[in-house]
Length: 155
Image (cartoon, rainbow, N blue to C red; front, side, top):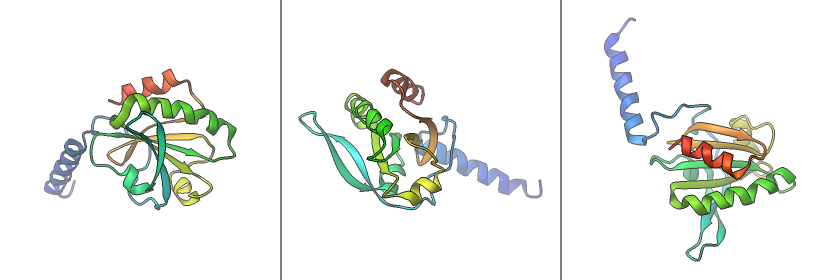
């Protein structure tokens, strides 16, 4: 190693970043969200009366969070039957988790650059991010209990 001081400084920065995000102990499984194209996406919100509503947001704003909130990103399309099966499951999980989980839907037809950047090749494709870095994923429709178990394993 040519410059051990430089390595020490870089290691310190990485440790500090992990402490600040609270996600440092989670394994990373994909690209960081940094550098991704932006686009308009839907965020699943639970209203005060317990109903599910959808709000528009910018993709990077919704996913690149610096707190410990897990962000579940569902890559889907309106014509996809499996995607339509997964939607109520994710909405139910959002109702249970409340503010501890952000659920974001990316329409791959409206946002092909985001899907391409993250390597989405088939839908439904779900990526889970923490601190702007992918920490888990799954493909297809899973039972609600399996998705909840995956989320618990990440907390």
